[in-house]
Length: 314
Image 1: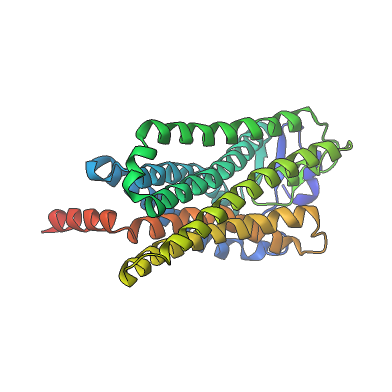
Image 2: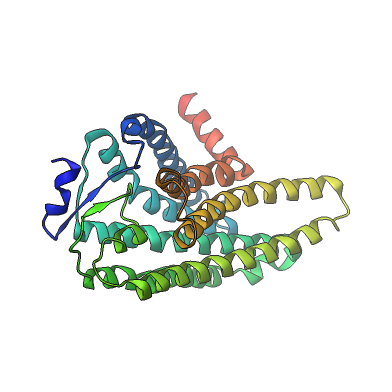
């Protein structure tokens, strides 16, 4: 069924266009996307398995890392397999309920990802600025409470999104100009005024994103101040190296998600394929990078994996 007929689909079905203007490249675009997904899948599962198996890794940093890995697995798995079906099998149709479910998982787990970045920044701040009290401040019970707060925040603020969309009438085209069911892309299809609904979504994204960014920035400013006061140059460089890699991942996540947010609000002249391509990046790149930055560059995890492989193949 061609795109021209998609406005005639039943109310329970939408049609995902993909990346407008780059439809002829979908097959090729799917190759790096699939590769990134496989790395994200293997890397995050490895981190979870290593931390579970090695009791010495049951520390605040690694517990938060596990929470981030679970978030990355859900976030990437809720988008990539469906996206690859679109790219490689031309499976454009998606039911309305499946679309709402995908949208809920994407937006709620994106909010959780942001929250876990903040939790890890707080952990690094305590570890560097008050190392003697690190384990007494960040006890297991407090770590669990922080994790629960992050999850509840994502669920509570995002749950209204699918509920609001469910109430709207869709009497226009049912073509979603996107590779997945993104809130703003779906709400544009409604045939009533959706100003209040759009403002709620933008306010939620703005409040969560800006508050997390400010707190993370404050944490790393205090960390840098403490690092430059360390008596040992070697210790300062080691701390800067660790924090630097973490900041790079955080910058990629917030720069791409921030671009998407600003484009929805002001960027009406941005080409759709640029907007959608970058929107895909903020869902793909962090789950791909996190296992590399937080896993391979973390000495304890790297040593455990290498020793396991050595035993396995010796």
